[in-house]
Image 1 (cartoon, rainbow over the protein chains, first blue to last red):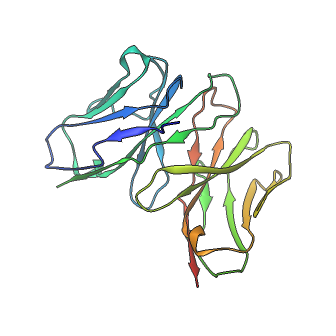
Image 2 (image 1 turned 135 degrees about the vertical axis):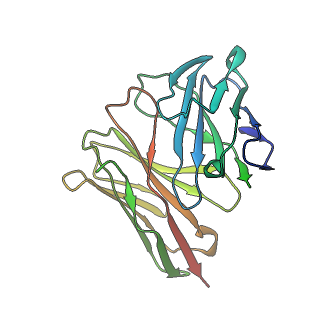
Length: 117
Length: 113
């Protein structure tokens, strides 16, 4: 079974530029998560999708971050414009289950390492 | 507080046992998890424990849960150099009706040969 795919693996941009990350979850997984992991910290949830609907985006900085999951499969996360503090690893994860269940096994992709200079 | 907390670093010798500790915040959290992250890789679920359990064993891994103190630990027996990684504990709070996980900041485990 193929895992969660992410691209690109690395990206270096200047502040105020735009960037987009792509995620392809495991086939059949209804739930997709985007996490931000700043160096030395644990992952922090940015947004969660159930199929193509948003379940939780309470920690997404909506003035500059946006995400979509068209057709309930692939997802893109965009930052526009980027700030220095956006330098982090952006992790995508997916899970098979539905909200309301209590056990969530999330499968993580390798992440995209973003450096903003 | 609001944070899941872990000690930042642990160094052990190969063959010794490792114990990684975590304190979480929500006494009503239903599941608690341990994830492993190797350099340049995503997170891999190692094990989990349901909140009505106080211990779970899985091969070399033993998870202990003290709900009264909101303390979770992961013991790795016969630690190997391949166990060197960052270990994260995470909780799924009952107040969250979704799969949202709250992670600690991670414990770096260094295994010396």
